[in-house]
Image 1 (cartoon, rainbow, N blue to C red):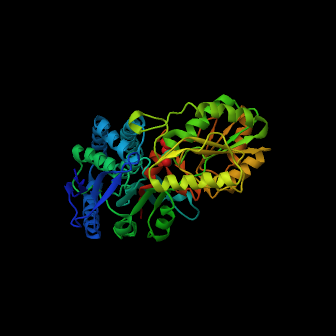
Image 2 (tube, protein in one colour; image 1 turned 60 degrees about the vertical axis):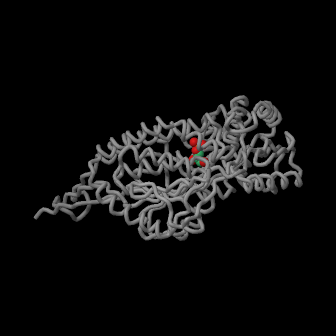
Image 3 (tube, rainbow, N blue to C red; image 1 turned 30 degrees about the vertical axis):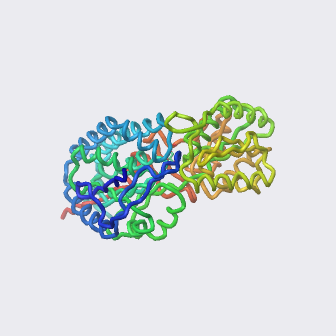
Amino acid sequence: DGEVYKYYSDGEWKKSTSGKSVNIVNPTTRKTHYKVQACTQEEVNKVMDIAKSAQKAWAKTPLWKRAELLHKAAALLKEHKSPIAECLVKEIAKPAKDSVTEVVRSGDLISYCAEEGVRILGQGTFLVSDSFPGNERTKYCLTSKIPLGVVLAIPPFNYPVNLAVSKIGPALIAGNSLVLKPPTQGAVSCLHMVHCFHLAGFPKGLISCVTGRGSEIGDFLTMHPGVNCISFTGGDTGVAISKKAGMIPLQMELGGKDACIVLEDADIDLAAANIVKGGFSYSGQRCTAVKVVLVMDSVADTLVQKVNAKVAKLTVGPPEDNRDITPVVSESSANFIEGLVMDAKEKGATFCQPYKREGNLIWPLLLDNVRPDMRIAWEEPFGPVLPVIRINSVEEGINHCNASNFGLQGCVFTRDINKAMLISDAMETGSVQINSAPARGPDHFPFQGLKDSGIGSQGVTNSINMMTKVKSTVINLP
Ligand code: G3H
């Protein structure tokens, strides 16, 4: 009906003075489904000013009160899981059930932040001076953790709600204010999520949500002098942000090419089940998706056959019908995936299923006998296409994994725990899963990427710590 969703600033829902809007295209119908405000740089300036003053008061708000409000927001989010999940279905074509799971997981994450925050921020340290050479016991040092100020949160399209709250929860419990710039696909889900914080009764201006075009407000936000910390999840844009951002802490998660190494002694059924779940859930649009299978040649035929049997059972269709494989987020994404598939075809990969695409919907595809000269051996499709590379030694697998410019997660399937540990040590990735597909959660686990996969470590505790600074007060005795 042409309604444009308002943005959130100073505790109110506002129309942008730009008079312009940004279209959100439903990936399934490929038609505009929602519209959001195209905020201006002046509006961003206003939001930053308000965020700064709101943060000062919030930092003085008792920790238990901050926690109480977060618990309230978490409960409200869970209460409103259905309408928010519906937005996820329309904006990012996430299957309906998974969309509900994302919202519930987000509520749990916020509550966990509140609980973890009161514990870790409720403690400081006490040091005495005479342990360091040349000192008498004349100095007592007290430390506590103080907030950074204004945190800018930029989540990606694939978990707009969950990866927003994974930044909002830690930021707020630690006494920061927060400015959210949602992804275009996922912006309306984010606005609904922010409404739950609004209903919970957080102080005005503490949380803001600005929508708009990256070209207009993207750099303006990330280079804004009012920002004291950026937490970003997404693609290459993160590299550009890290080059342009000022002298502020950055938390970045920028994708991966998670390898799954399958050894000869692996439980092949278990490996196959995890490869299908890891490679194809949400149509492969997860940074932690299995993105390349490196299987020992002697068990490759059996593995490929078992994976294919499971791929054949995957349902394909609209997210409303809870299909396993749903349309990928945009036409350009589908085109990119198709480019990788065609390159593999030209270079002789074995197609285990015929390649099929209708609009943004791409049928699940396993590519066997992929070789290192194919783009798909290195690039992340972010779609339901999974390459298999046959290897003749564990070293070959580790070398392939480590030659990637990414280093998010990896996994290894073997019944030999000693071997698994050695492989885990050798893999240059932020996490290695033994006998399971890569995954970020449970959300209190540390989550980090090496190399181009990111900066810093996430997970509830690490994020709270990252969004604070240590402050010392030293008592000097005469
Ligand atoms: O897309 C990146 C997400 O952080 C992955 O989260 O492992 O829970 O799917 P997930």
